[in-house]
Image 1 (tube, rainbow, N blue to C red):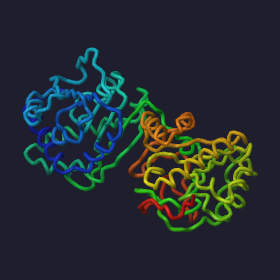
Image 2 (cartoon, one colour):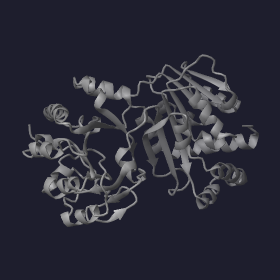
Image 3 (tube, rainbow, N blue to C red):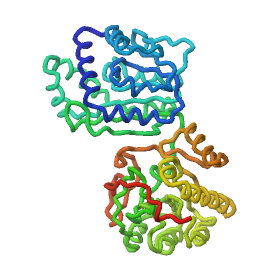
Length: 429
């Protein structure tokens, strides 16, 4: 990337405006860093100097910033007197890091400004950092034109820069996967400067491949109800209290062949009246592979033995949520109860040949290990599978169809609209 005065001025103006008006994304970055075991950072591009206090928390020991613009690097050092920070002038593609290693690499809107984004992504991945954070704008042609009005003196240069980047049509997830990195958390900022129609997609990549079994393999992901006995913070489910009509369910599984997969979810699917008799049993009788996605509270219900009986030795799998979002918010007595239930289910499932997994939303291996250690269940580590966390669940890609409670079919996850707080009254000892 060749930095001339015009391009440098535009970039500086862009980042300065971005830093003032996009705290949503900066706090997303802070959330991504939360509890990550990160000490050494590589920041590609000095434009995020406005967010240094968020992107470089006290736990960071060293931060290397690489940028071809000496003035931007100088401004960063002048603004922040921080002995942890080093700078390296030059293009990232040609940077020589010697024997240095990094826990985390930032690419926050910096792909807009490099000559060869693909080469940059591969260069970064070749350093084998534990984590890579990439923020990228998602723009239509109309939005590009609208954005240019915010940089009237450099309108042509801005249009050229963004159009050039957009024309490459990079599939960043595919590129990262080719380098053995996978999305663990995906945040969508609702807007970025200059107009609210714009969006920024921020992804935390790790080398841990998330479990996508029902999303990639299920013919139908079926929302059998709109109710739950957990009121987890930031839950996306529209809590209507409705159950799916069993006749609607039977109509949909008429098109499902033997050994094809369906996934039953809610809300909490096991709160559906007659779930075993009207939903699970008919599907299993047809030879359908049934996936039950649950918070696990059915283990403490009077119907628990019936669930064990219908699932024993069958073409089915139970997927139980086990992560901080589904456990930490509750009082200690409920956390203890849930851990006891899951422990009982693990023993029963192993004895009865019931396939199961415990699924952690947006948690890396190090976070899972610490989490299990706190609850004295380290032996569960082999049962844990990571799932990608989406701030906008409608963006979660599925290969099949999503069936809402009323039977409406969608090509994406829906049933959105409710948030709550942990509900301890509905869960007994």
